[in-house]
Length: 163
Length: 249
Image (cartoon, rainbow over all chains, first blue to last red; front, side, top):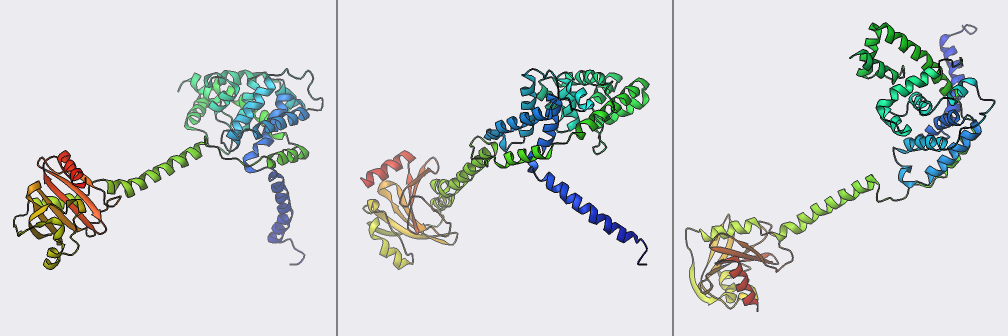
């Protein structure tokens, strides 16, 4: 039996590999407190908005600095919505980058090139943080307008290349 | 549900295997299975959504950026007291309510005229047997007389000691001894009884509480140490107050 592959021993060997990976992943997740984990998705959203990881980092950092001074929303359940609404507002009040990051994958570029408010609406739908009425609130549209906006945005993505 | 409505619902639906669709979405999905055009539109939408989803979820925040954001979050000072915070407002309202209830209990109840004293006054006025004995002495000098009769603690406020009592008695009301004297010159009866059986509290001590008992009689009550002293007087409440104020002067 010593040389045979017992299923139990195999499971234990697998666990010995999986557990450290799990701990490693947990430690990475634990970088941010639970209430602030959305910052990772906020960064992804900012990459799509700005077309540049560096610009996304700057944008998220400056938004975080702004939020950090607002005591009224620091412990508030609306903080996440305020954060995304601020990202949306700040990006769209400045001109779009003339040339997005050259290293950006094509599928992200395709999302970046979409028009607002469709780009944000579709991204926020996929991030799954907000119900439809809050997404409408963030992009400053009526809830009833969102189906048309989403349809037009998806239509614009039909030639989106495979990732 | 019609085609237009089902279509608009499905456009706003991003399929997630971990989340059960809402009843409206389930109806729309059922409708789509029966409609070729809607089904093909929705299938195309699913394909696009899959690619968009994998694109968005495929973005990974660099470790150094994550670390920098974590440090910034950790540096955010803890939330300071904000009186406009709804939680703070709720706590404040709760505290005020608590204080109000306590005040009502400890101050409001003694401030009102005790019901038990009113019941004693009614009993005295409607006492069938009249076991009164003639005394014809000033009210203030009857303490010994009552002690001899078995009632300890009869004490008349100094301002009322001068009034002449015509007769006096010890009445048994609900197994409680009540000392009563009649003062005909003032159309009044002075009553004295222990405050403990009925737990009568008056705050502050030695202050008067007044009430109009009925159309003919008014009551005034005070408590000194363990004893209650009550004046039952024919006439209005205003007349009773005037009588006591005049007596005090």
